[in-house]
Length: 446
Image (tube, rainbow, N blue to C red; front, side, top):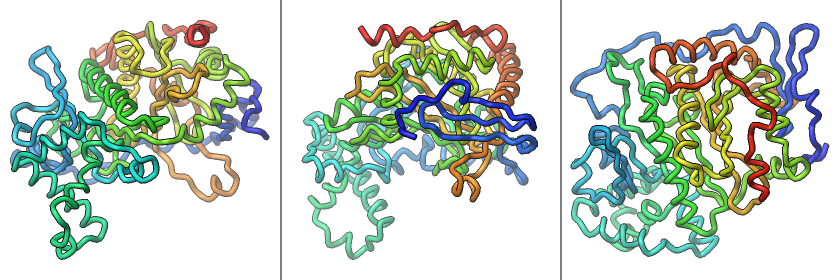
């Protein structure tokens, strides 16, 4: 089957006589089955031996914590809170890192997926003048120089460099290794808390769902700003992938809340497949996603500018949040539209729970594409492992059907809303997804 062949809506979800639910992803063509009886296992990780938190370790639980700023590469920016006022500080010097407490920090990834050297060698990329000044200013102070060279040495040791190799490097060679910290395209957005307020043992991690709706909104706007800056800093970037791995089973290096953004020079396989299908049917996101979910009672919540529903055709149980905005990229959405997306995503995290490993994946229209592709975010619960059956057949077993995901999430959303833990929104039977409710397609075509 050609990747551009559209899948009839009747084939997107089919329930067999024995209760098996067969699903096909309308954009990727991935085939998924949910088999009766396999979804009764409990979700989330277990905590057989919880350990009480030691007061002496406060703020030092891991390298992302607030008392260990100098153990990560030099930060690019931070978001601080002063009462009800939030402000962003860019390029804080090493000798001023502890003058304020960062609610969220944007730092370079120590081990980049796509390195600065990749851009330099393959494209002749050179750091923009403002970033070069930032690097020079940071290295001009003793604290900054020592910080940078210590982090460079840590990274090179991990790559097999020994002490004698390090000693043989000149000062300029050592500094050159730090270019990626200032001009690189792989950023990490780190939240302040390691454990939630009031936690008394190591099971009380601070997740997206334990943030307040306002904190989550600031977390999202800070991420959107970082994405915009990565595009602006490197004209060779074709796509910035944004994602969040929560807990080690989902790929996280630290059980400390953070997102990642990676600039790449391709659109990505998923985007290429979607673009082919959208060219064949520009209304596909309505017909095979949002409205389809509404017609099949999979919508879990909605507000004026976004809608959340239990997804289908995914390898893992998935909640999808779609923006109704005409903006195809998040930094062009209005503040109200970004907040709407944040509120629904935050509610999905809160309903999922802190103990469920998950991947949060952002999707937006690549900057060199004209097709109407909406900004949307998927929250995937990593509650099963792929095995031989999937590898041999390319048919994936998802332990929870979309309706089961909906039925787990909706009662939790009502409870959270009643307790004031999530923002106001219309939930389940209150939520309505009108036909063609995503007007972005018509607007983007003008």
